[in-house]
Amino acid sequence: MTTKKNLLFVLAIFMVSSYSLLGQITHQANFTEDVTVETLLLEDGNTYSRVILSEEYATIDTAGHPNLPVRYIKLLLPANTKISSIEASFSNVQSYTLEHPVEPVQHPIPTSSTPPPPPQTL
Image (cartoon, rainbow, N blue to C red; front, side, top):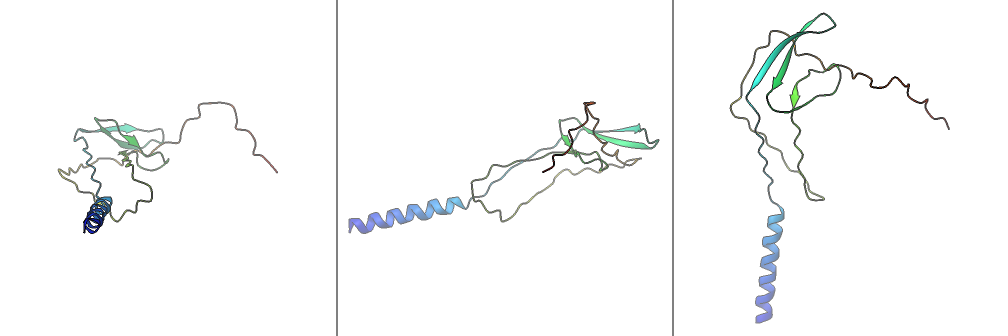
């Protein structure tokens, strides 16, 4: 009888621990509401709007795309984790009317005058 109780106890613990592996990860990211829009004239002769947030944000680095602040969120997940869904909810959404298009991301400025080495040939 004791062996049967021990077996049931181990089985119950295994089921509870297995269920906890199917857990849910929740991450909350708060974004600033302090937005500044500057007007600037670029070398192409066009006037653009520059969107600036009071906190430190990355920007998109693809030349020609709108230069808007972005925030990347990286989550560390256990190995072999399968994602079943991602949800995003927004509160206090604010809209802004811009007088000009958002400035495009510029091509990077070279920091060296040394030309790159020629490609290797086989």
